[in-house]
Image (tube, rainbow, N blue to C red; front, side):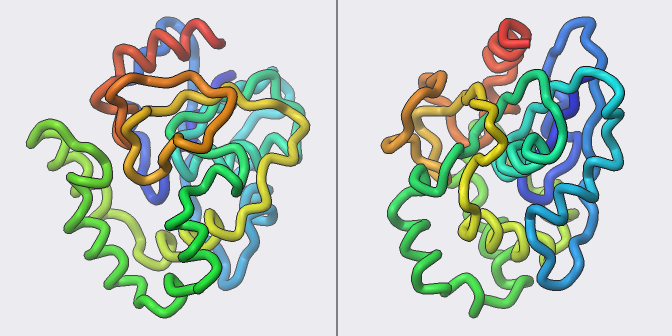
Length: 212
């Protein structure tokens, strides 16, 4: 069974253009984390949505790629595919590592971070059409601000993939949020940005079908 995990606060709408052929799949639903909850504990809660009696293929996008790697550390997984994500904290751009060191993200109110993200969404996600921008802003408006702040903190604190499974990593070479300049062992998507699960869906779909 294939399980899809969307990006930070997003939902199944980011997968509306993904074509997996005749493969059955299910989208993991985000839950609101408890105060101070660790990513390891949170990922255990999401496993309740997975049928562990069957072979499991995890596909995670952005923050969902990190969560997929955490889940793979708890249960047997046949294949692990991450898209627009990272495999290690060493792959974070130096600007994000600076945010981690300074802890400035902790000082910003959750609502302000959400509005800031919406305002700059078209640039950082490399949106190409008004339809894409509408979809992205719709998703971001529906996202719980406190969840987003919790997720950002956990991305910055993440220790890296400890599942023992090497993820198959698909990444856009023009991703403005998670720059691939320091990446190794990934499948590059020319002109792909952070929203390529939507605006490069045909190319991503073909790659994913080949990988699974």
